[in-house]
Image (cartoon, rainbow, N blue to C red; front, side, top):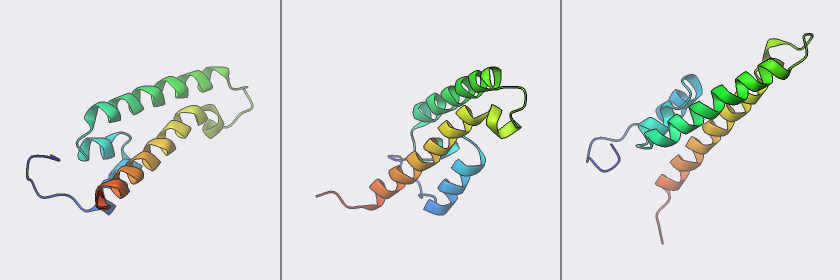
Amino acid sequence: MAGSGARRLPSWLILLSALLVPGSGHVLLGRPNRGLVMLFWMVIFGYVTFRLAPQQAGFIGKISGGAAVWALSVVDVARMLGAKSRPRI
């Protein structure tokens, strides 16, 4: 999509997509492999923390590894959006 000459989606829509569906922001920016890698690590770290968390931990505590990677992927999409809007010198 980046080089196809198609109309570019608004930045807020891409960021909202990354917030709602993990990895989709990368796909909309034309980096599907990066989105798939983020999704892979989200599942792996979510599973590991779910299995290693103590019984009394809440659900968010049990999946905190996956949630951390999800938050980093949203920040990565925001960084990529900022880099695309800035002109290169």
